[in-house]
Length: 490
Ligand SMILES: Cc1cc2nc3c(=O)[nH]c(=O)nc-3n(C[C@H](O)[C@H](O)[C@H](O)COP(=O)(O)OP(=O)(O)OC[C@H]3O[C@@H](n4cnc5c(N)ncnc54)[C@H](O)[C@@H]3O)c2cc1C
Ligand code: SF4
Image 1 (spheres, rainbow, N blue to C red):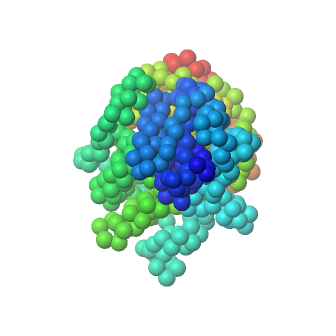
Image 2 (cartoon, rainbow, N blue to C red):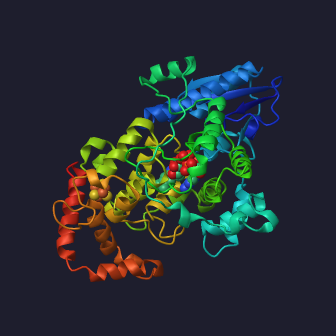
Image 3 (tube, protein in one colour):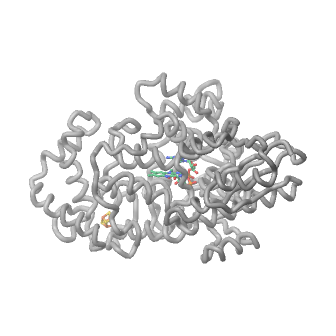
């Protein structure tokens, strides 16, 4: 044997990373199920199920195609590699560049050789070139450059449909009396059953654990949900947990699908004429824009970025994040309940409910980040860090986003259907039945008024704050709410 090829659990694709050009005759493929990964933190069991079962299926698939595969359980990844070296001798160990700073350093220090990480459409070098040519890191500018560079819906260098951005058409509230198409259910096999029984869970049928299943999910999304993805992409519905979202992030992030496959399928569907441009553009923006931008920013901003806490937020994580029964807030209760069930909610609940709550309560960013990493099925370090520290909690002082995504109950009431069944009133900011989001929104602006005084994008909010005539009363209520959240009494 010539080489050991180490495959982390987020590089599960035969045509990319270190497996590209691998030879079953001379390469041994090594996967390590490390205790650090499985028991190091209170991970959501569904997340563990998905990651472990996908890796075991992938290992079995490679073996069936003639590779020598060692799937090793060990305390740490390095311990696992040592076991493989004992068995096969000290061969060169090859891996695609890992997707977190921590793993990058650990493997490099152990002497692992890296090949380029081509699980993204934008190399780290290319992103750095873009970032260094910018005054501010506006995603929109990056996205337009991506459309041109990757030649996606830009006939003659002009955006399809006459404009780059269909956001205005893509902000409808949840529809009434609407029939949502069913979601694809994924059957379980022996490997799934074994992993589920080791974890002591019922794995349900939401998440696939094979490439075939991931491909089926992509096909299903394109056929049943893509056309209506755009208009409702920001809506939050009480009667539906995924709306028209693709549910593809877990597979994109563990390698079962590559972004280029997703984009090719989306463009091909658009070209049949069945997909409105607003939906096509809205979806493509997420994949070649946001996803690539977030990965680029993670590497560009460096390992210290995750420790940012520029707003000096020190509150502990509200109890409700660990237990959905610890609140009367219908929106938070429903969303945390959905996470408990499936380890997933879509972008707007993550941003405008969960992160928003953490932001306006002044929750410590690193505590919130740890929680988000633990409970989401698609949470890899590279994607959670910029989304939480930069986008969700504005903990980086505005390096990534020029203004914080803080909002009161009015936003959640407009874009969601939770408020009617809630103990609180989104319009009220003081009193026992005031919506905690509304109270805390103004309190947040007041607590941070100096930090935002020179931010011209916050001008309107700052002015609104000056006009409040019940600020003293509101501040008393805000501290009751923060205290109540800490004890599960709100
Ligand atoms: C605070 C916060 C935390 C997040 N954490 C994660 C995370 O850990 N992992 C993750 O994959 N996404 C994360 N996102 C982005 C987004 O919420 C999810 O990618 C999306 O909800 C996944 O569901 P979907 O596949 O149905 O997405 P769709 O709505 O169908 O979008 C298609 C694809 O676009 C990509 N995408 C869209 N927005 C982003 C974004 N901001 N960052 C990266 N990719 C994006 C994803 O790959 C997604 O699969 C986070 C967003 C916020 C605001
Ligand atoms: S009233 Fe406030 S807490 Fe209740 S569901 Fe609406 S936004 Fe959420």
